[in-house]
Structures are given as structure tokens and as C-alpha cells.
Length: 137
Image 1 (cartoon, rainbow, N blue to C red):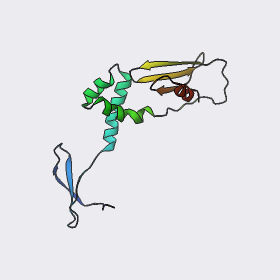
Image 2 (cartoon, one colour):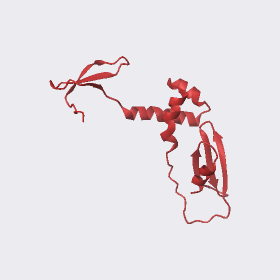
Image 3 (cartoon, one colour):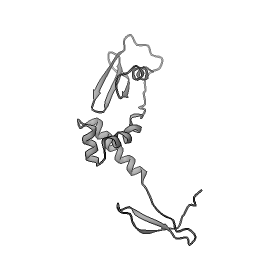
């Protein structure tokens, strides 16, 4: 198991400009950089929000971010899995339920609605049996 160094000092920068830190312990001397995953997550979520609320394609958003389309698609995977709270009434019986899917640049929004309000909705990549099952669950 690697040792944890607590007494670090700045030791220049990497070729990309990140600050390099070196352990001051005479027995160690490890050099490392620190990452800010919170900033990376925020950057990726802003790009995802821009993608699903605009008409730009994934390739265009990727070009704006300076990465490939496949990299951006991989970064967006966790955001497709966000569960939205559903304050529905679990024991209510509806006479009719209307279900439909609407395609956007970001995927497919499946909606279950009664005559006067939305009962549930679910984001999916496309209209499939599994996606509609998730909607109705």
C-alpha cells in the first residue's frame, strides 16, 4: 500500500500547467498532482444540460468542449441514470393513462399522463419495451 504524504510543497507544473506537488519527507520524495473531481463533474453536467436543452448535436457539443463525441458520450452516462423523484399516488386508480415518447437531440422522453396531469416520466435512449416498463413501474 502506498504511503500517504501530508507534508507537500509545490514543485513546478506539468506540461499541461497543473501544479506538481512533492513530498518534503527525506525518505519519500513522491511527486504528484491533485485533481478536482468536483470541477470535472460540474463541467460535464453543464455540457450535458446544454446538450439536452439545445438543438446542438453531440458532435457539436463535443467540439465546443474540445473532446471527441465518444468521450463526451462516455462522460454523459451517469447523467442518464439520474432518478427524478416521482411524487405520484401509488394506490390511485386511473380510468385512462396516455403514454407516449418524444424524441429530442438527447434521447427519448417517455411520458405517462392522465387527462389533466403527468403521472410519470422516464428518459431513455429509445422507445423499447424495457423503457416503457420502467416508465409504468
